[in-house]
Length: 405
Ligand code: HEM
Image 1: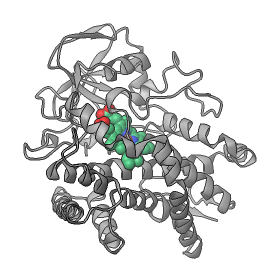
Image 2: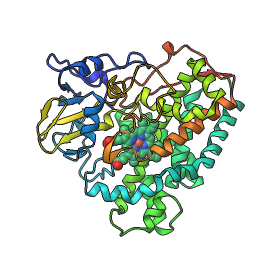
Image 3: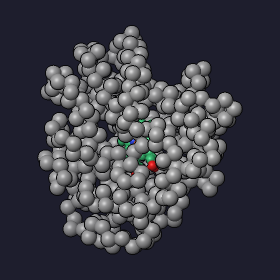
Image 4: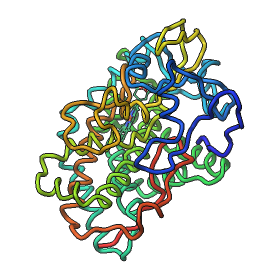
C-alpha cells in the first residue's frame, strides 16, 4: 500500500497520491491539475514521474488505447513503490497482461462474469446478506458495520465464486482478514505466503476432483486457448480474492455512510426502490474508490490531452477527478439519482474494465437495499467528520462505521 506519508517532497511536480480531506469532495490538487491547459506530471512515492490524466475524455482515450500497457514489470510502469514490481516467478494474472495474451485469458473466464451470471447469483447473495443482517440484529449495539457487514458479505461471496469448501471458510476468512489488515510488512508477507499456500492446495484439490465454481470449471477446460495452467490459476484465485473483496467492502461501507448521512436520499430510495440501480451507479461515480488500477505505460509515442507521451513513460488515469469532470457530468459534485445511463469510469474502461462489475452492481444493490429495508432505525453513532477513512490506502474506504438502531 502506498502511504502518503512516504511521498517525497517535490518542488517541480505535485506529489501523488493526494489525500481526500472530505469523503464527499475531490482531493486538494485535482481541480488544479484538471484545469491546466495540458496534461501535467506527478511524482510518485517511488520517485518515478508519471503523466496524470484528469479529464474524462483523456482518461477514456488512454484506457481505450492498446498502445498503453498494463505490464507492471515494464521499467516505465508507474508503480507507487519499487517493491510492488512483481517477482519474475509471480504470475500477474489478468491485471498485468496485455493483448493478445490478455484477450484470450479474459475470454476464458468472462463467461462466469456476465450480467446473466450476476442475475443467477442474486438469490445466494440475498441469503448471505440476510444472514449477516440477522447476526447484526442479534449482536450488541452499537456495532461496527464494516466488521459486521461490509467486510464479510463480499468475502463470503468470493468464497462461493472460487469454491472454497465450507469446512475451510473460517480459516480462509481469518487469513484473508490478516492479509488485508496487516499492520507490518512482515505480517503481510507471512499472511500472503499462507494464503498462497492455501490457494495452491485449493487448485490441486480441484484438479483431483473438479467442482462447479469459477476455478473448478477452468480446471476442466485446461488446454483450451487462454485457460490458465496450475500456476496461473493459483494467481487468478488470489487476484479474484484481492479484486473482489476490499473494493466491495469499501463501497458498501461508504454507501451506507452516505445514506445514513442523507435522510433525503434514503427516503427517495425507500419510497421508490426502482431507483436503487441509479443510486448504485452514482455511488460508484461519486466515491470512485479504485483509482490507481488505471495506471499504464506507453509502448509508443502517443498524443493525449494536448501532450506527447513518449514511449516508456507512465500515465495514471485519475478517475476520481475524471468522474467529477463538469464537461461530462452536469453539476458533478452533487449526488444525483437522475443521471440516466451516463456511466462513469469507476470500473475503468477498455480491455481491462472491471470483470466483476455486473456482480458488483448486483451485490451493492442487494446489500444496501436490504440493509435499509430490514433495519429502518439504523443510524450513525458519530457524525461523518469524526469517522476514520483509508486516506493512506490505494483504495478509498472506511476503517470503521459505528452504527446503532
Ligand atoms: C466497487 C467494487 C469494484 C471496483 C470499484 C472495481 C474497480 C476496478 C477497476 C477500476 C478495474 C480496472 C483495472 C485496470 O484498468 O487495469 C478493475 C478490474 C478488475 N476487477 Fe474490479 N472492481 C470492483 C469489484 C470487483 C469484483 C467484485 C471483482 C470480482 C469478483 C472484480 C474483479 C476484477 C478483475 C478480475 C479485474 C481485472 C480485469 C482485467 O484486467 O481484464 N472487481 N476493477
